[in-house]
Image (cartoon, rainbow, N blue to C red; front, side, top):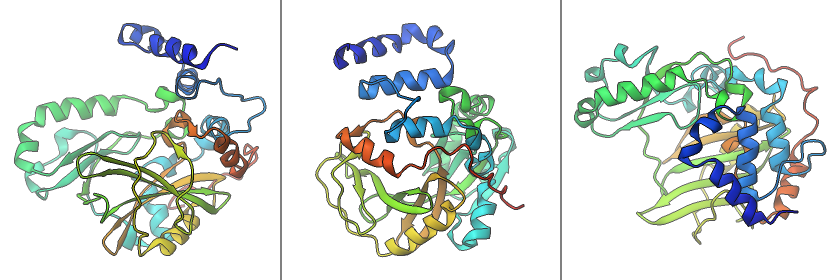
Length: 309
């Protein structure tokens, strides 16, 4: 078998800027498999999936995932959260729009987020409205580009395929560690199994910690390795786990993302295919342990009821 270092170099070469046209001609799902090869040094085994990565890749490309579009839609999912948990864990949304031209930024608070509902990472943070408005033309171009793109085409994540693109303005939240933060709760078959906390403390300390539900640090990471940094157990941990399990009940797997801001619990989103399955689990044996948590096959799962239905 070809050396893993050589494999990574080959894939890195294919994804260099000069190969942009070549990469754009490939399907999102194939690109995802190439990225997994680059990250982990192994080609996904989709005929006999055993690892977390392989099962997640199949999950995000399944028919079931396409039936989850309304839950991946960051606006539509709010109705589901409201019905299951209640409005108290929802952030304030100041408006929903078809384009940036519709937004009256002068009427908004000093701080806010401008987000899209149909992808990942398409957000603009405003901590100073005067500066934000000064860059309005650049922001319009950027958001217009986001609205034109179907995020599904990037990596083949089918939950994004049929979402109608929108912009929305959300309240500004201070999510800085260690006082506040985001809890990413991984729920398999309705049971919370582990929790990811990511971010930075100060200017340099990178955090990517994984805990069990008793807040014991686990000996693995998904993605970038964390610097040694213990975080205090959140006061609302048990409540957040119960919320995550209630929201995750209709799904074989979902990561429920919740903010804890002081004593307040705030819903962020339902993430069905974290990082499009491309990040490796380290050490490698833990990818098999996490894979054992992942129910498979999932093609026969019942279709979830659309939010608000």
